[in-house]
Each structure stands twice: as C-alpha cells, then as structure tokens.
Image 1 (cartoon, rainbow, N blue to C red):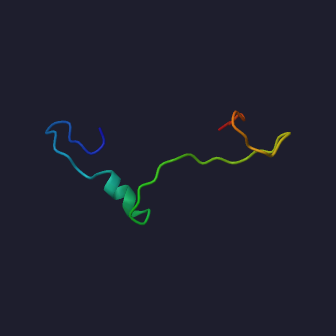
Image 2 (image 1 turned 45 degrees about the horizontal axis):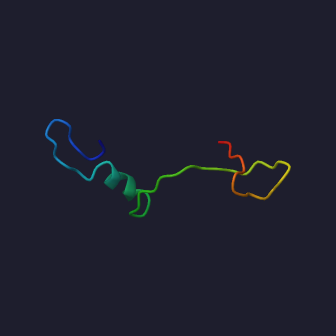
Length: 51
C-alpha cells in the first residue's frame, strides 16, 4: 500500500508528499485525453471514448 511500510506497518506521507512538491503542494492524478475529429464534434452521454 502507498504510505505504509510493509515490514513495520508504520504510516508515512511518502510518496504522495514527494509528488506534491513538484505540483505546487497538490498531488493530482488523471488521464490525458485529446479529441480526435470524427463525424460529430459534440460529446454526449454514451459517446465512445478512445485512449
């Protein structure tokens, strides 16, 4: 698990603390998506999403 030493069960802020130092104090996670033009340029519920 993130932030728990498996041998001692001690909790730690790492690695999230290190990740936050390069992002102005915030650790953010997500996906990078880009729109590829197709027959429709309107995104609606149920539209296919390809990564």
